[in-house]
Image: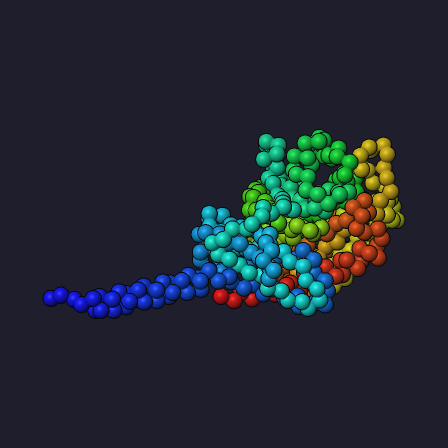
Length: 400
């Protein structure tokens, strides 16, 4: 049967309208699918928070982030540096990490764009390496931010390297300029052992110094695993096994992290095997200086050490005068006991009477040549502020 011209025109108009409507629906759906995810970050304190980290499990974000990546931007459309890390070693990304700066009680919105790419490469501001990647056969790890570098040789005993300029210099610079395991010759580093020891972990298995047991004294087995190496944080896992103490066999795992823009190491301790929860866990921080020039203060959430003494920077025959400072910040802080004073093994010790694992400890360090702190009063104010910040982390909400 013949179809009239008017009928064909009507069908064509209907088909055109249908196609346009379908395309409009599909376009609207695609538009909704590409809408950014809003991450609101809030400062719960009256303190200024500069370069402070935010960690968000990827399970809180669309699954496409795992598959196709993402871009992160502020409300003005500027890229926010970030990194995505595989924290459990299963080959799948687990966590988004980025840093923000906030004023007192301020909140900001960060926009996550799944499937998009950042417009610019990110400057590397933090790093971590295993030492056997730098010197074959040498066990341990090195962490670095713009302000400090830390190294851990064999078992858990940290060395700190001060800097005179805020730049990332790299593990090869630190360890290949001098005799491995001692001091680098680079003039912008404080020689480890000549001024500060970053810290150690002990068990208190008996009275006095004889009761302080350290992993490297007991030939414990230690292994290191690299988790993340920048651009904003470096993370290394340390496992301590077969630590034979007077109290029995101890096994600990530690996740050690350094963040861009910060002058501390964050260490989270987990007990794999702990023979008795009544055994105090000790943390040490040391400063070497002239006799009578050290000052130790214990507060409810931190131990603070300051010193004005002579330290070796380059030439052992030419020590220079320097202001040195160390501190430990604790979470939880309910278990802190007053330290007994200077121990014969040379460390200042604080105790966690009955460790409630996981235990979070921050190792902080500074010296006057980096230009940030020049007096005990400045360091005291900084550690008090940082302790409040660490015990009141930034808050965030994810809105789909």
